[in-house]
Length: 352
Ligand SMILES: NC(=O)c1ccc[n+]([C@@H]2O[C@H](COP(=O)([O-])OP(=O)(O)OC[C@H]3O[C@@H](n4cnc5c(N)ncnc54)[C@H](O)[C@@H]3O)[C@@H](O)[C@H]2O)c1
Image (tube, rainbow, N blue to C red; front, side):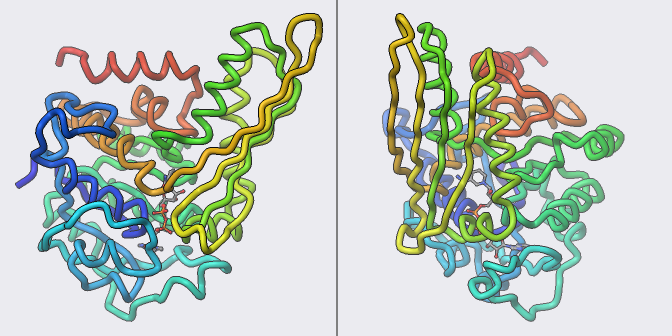
């Protein structure tokens, strides 16, 4: 049995990168661990994390072994590792609002009977449930939070739906004596982090930012779902997060804009910054960042999973602020990057 037993809901691109990443990084020499922020965290390494249960609704994934499901369409993130048979079959969960107007022709709903989710979680001995549902799946995100509470799992909400930052849900996890973290995972080389860092750097150097925007285009199913359902939500979350990087008000816009199918799982992010420096002389920055979406979530997920396990060991309950602020764009409380980093390191290295 793995030391950290994880269940995932939503076997999409992000889940694919996570599962492949676990295979890629397990049992490697220290010098081969390039690409991870923390090789060891709280004494845990990649090989200590194991996926013990998985849920989806797509007929090309349900009933399949996880190793096969992660490479099934419409997933389009690249193959990163040869994942052997996992002996974890993907269960069918309830559809609820999992399929949006724009993804109804892309996701093929399976006619398998629905699993008893809480029972599967208990029987698999899962201790952490990660929500990797489409961003528009608010009801399904809440349903799985409920199943985590029933089955005694910590809940990691990678979606932009408000769970860890919602007072009512925070209280419910607190009462159940379980940890919850979220909302909306931060990428390793993410546009939000890069945007905030650039603004902080310029502002620290005395540049006064007048206006800035960051917009991106992607080709994964998630970008399609965003187009249909969560464009405004994502824009609000990202804009608020970026605004917090400046000590004064400026015109800030940050959000996803469009879906371009041939990009596959690639995401192109465009940045525009306009400001003034010495003697009110204008300056501007025009930048493009190109990343592959799902692998961009892997390193942060590795850290969040291990930190959540540490919280479970310490019997921490409710929203874990240091983990939320470090790994998510919409934590219960926004804070500068360095403070979030420090709080996370203090939390992980705290003596039990
Ligand atoms: N870098 C990143 O990939 C990144 C960063 C931050 C946040 N996120 C968030 O992670 C989530 C997952 O992203 P993704 O790119 O893997 O999305 P995706 O669309 O590739 O995968 C979603 C999966 O959920 C499944 N699904 C839909 N409804 C379901 C239901 N009711 N029950 C079970 N499964 C269901 C779909 O079939 C699909 O397999 C999104 O909410 C996204 O906003 C991802």
